[in-house]
Length: 229
Length: 281
Image (cartoon, rainbow over all chains, first blue to last red; front, top):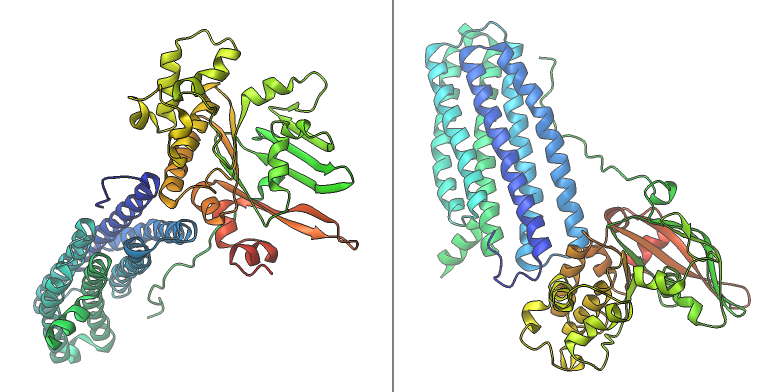
């Protein structure tokens, strides 16, 4: 983070930097797990799906530790202004990241449940695209956080429409083929679509929190203000 | 479909074991310590440990005996004729009040910084060298001055005016000079009695930064009226209160002593919670 040149609160600044770094690293672990779960789902690799579940335990531990740290820093350092926005937002960002990790786990669990089922080519291709787009949006949310880029919120919100369109396409294909694949599988595959859509949303939310950290308002608030003007 | 969707992990914030429970890592071990001034019992029943290379903060309302207690750590209460200390204070396992202990040596190893900066009416240079000279310091005094002032984060501000009259420095600079003077005698511990109460917020934050750096080399015990300061800088915090007896006699008591994170997020005692949240009557 950028700190004033007269580093009166050097130790506090170091703590804030460590919270930011730890959160971005946690996000990177979740992103890695998303890629793992996608590969497992597309390649029907059950052992990889089990690795996703194992990796999430470490993610959860790190999440709880970071959340506790933020809580304690707020209690001890009496943050105000930018520091307060940063720390309060980090509790939310951490939650977005942790939930994204859980969604990746849900995809892996779904794969384990429908063990042996091979995806029809049309659905395979849609899930591949959707997973790629969702993980990319999540990753861009993390990049916005690492760089504290206030512009990313608006940009990612616009990019999210493409993900929503893909989910719509996936639902249509599943609905058309549901008789053939059976109700349970149709529901499972629809849920994969839903999870991926949520992962993308979490990425957008992270970027919007960054906008708030840097500017003091959320992208929709700024947009509403400029519309009024 | 038997496996449910994953939910967020439960949050269990671990509460550390009570610091009063272990003796093994104590630099100071206080056992049932009490101090009275004549018939007035200022503080009683204090049992606690102070760990090396940590900042231990004492907080509590006026009259709770925290400064009185601090003064037991380097036998400053010896200088008050009516003061009586009972119980024991062990320092590195040695009874600080034992018959063979020299209080002057105690105060060299356990330095003190006071509420109001009190530089000697001498030059900045002489303020640093005064104590070491008396103690027969044989090293290079120029080096000692530079090292002490650097450690106290004051060197850059005064290096070109070491001959200047110390009381002409700003309040914050004077207090850092007093810290430099305290560490020039190479102590093990620095006691601080409300070191920032006369300083503005920026000068206060500079002293706090300094404390966080100094704890790598020294053990610090600080009395502060400013509980936010205790929250910001200390590793462990002791909260004291005043008990009022039937005849109106007021005696300080240790209520709770724990990791500062615990004290300021989840104290065990309601009295601590009431005080730190400003609901103390």
